[in-house]
Every structure is written in structure tokens, then in C-alpha cells.
Image 1 (tube, rainbow, N blue to C red):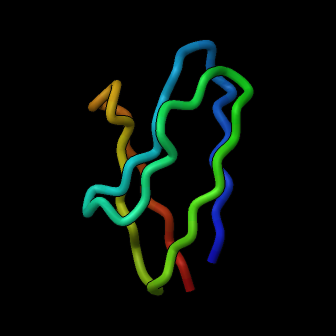
Image 2: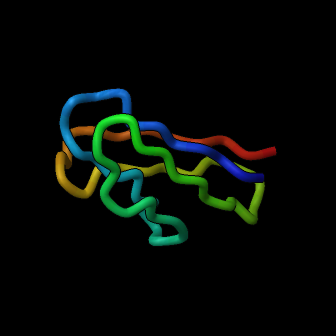
Image 3: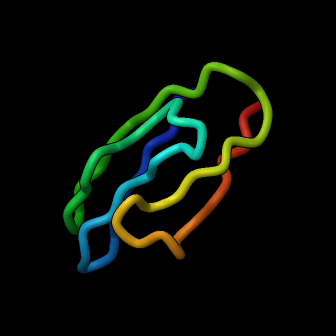
Length: 60
């Protein structure tokens, strides 16, 4: 699967997989990045700049 992350916030963020399998790099406001997820299942991620920001992508 390919997932597109879009930063709609005014601050720079990343979407970095907890296991290191993907990383968008720093995304400024309005920037997008696509990542490929090779395996089905849950893939937790976080913002490397703001550690309290977390999420999970679920691939089928």
C-alpha cells in the first residue's frame, strides 16, 4: 500500500514508523509525502519532532 501524509498544521512534522520502516522526513505546512507499506497489519508511527504525536496506519 502507498499512504500519503499531508501536513495541514502550521508547524513542521514527520511521520516516522516506530520500527523505522518508513519516514517522511520533515514536512512543512502544506507539504505531502508518500510512503510504501509492504506488510499487512498495524504500523505505529510518531512525529520525530513532537514525541507526543502518534498514530497507526493499518494496511490490509
